Length: 281
Image (cartoon, rainbow, N blue to C red; front, top):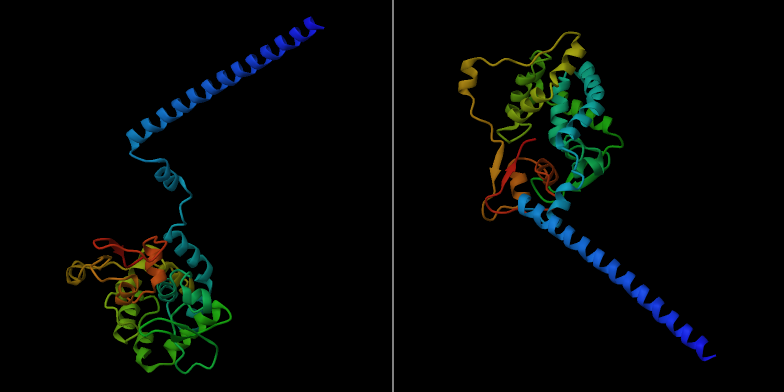
């Protein structure tokens, strides 16, 4: 009996020792691996200057680029703009450029809420409306059931007002004349409005849609040396000053806050003095 008890005690001690040894070995191995991982991480940080948190941010999926959003917008709405050109003689390139600029490539708050792609207000409007901050807080803007009705209303807005009559005497593919004429007729107060439209049309070759409607090959307008010399450089960027807010900057350049945030890939409204912001796409 005593011998049996001794054997059992010896077995228990041996088992405990074995488990402890395995745990110690496993623990030592784990600690060694941790030291190696830590050393690797520190070496990488020393080379790249990035912490784990910074690397996680940089390696996260990037938000879709604004140029991709513009391309998607063009593919979606070009047929509608071309149909409006056939019916109302407004260059499809101009309509698309205005739509991109006014709607933030379809992602502005007013466009999402009301399918309003051109920022047309409720003056003389008998349909539905939404309220949105613009020149004054909570102004009434027209609401449409579908974007195509916003495009049609844009065509009617231009054709039914005498101040835009001179535009329809231009050649139907004279997008530069239209861009400058819209500003001269009072469509926008931003002195850079024509430049912004022309920049979009030529960067994304929107004049090709005019050519398709007219049944001819369209090309970008070629400036003469004299014309280039007379033009002032376009204001593409703005440096944030003390007291500036996204709203005040957006208002200055006739943008929505959403557009300004999209142009600069901003996730919130925080900006800093000295920060450079793009004020055109």
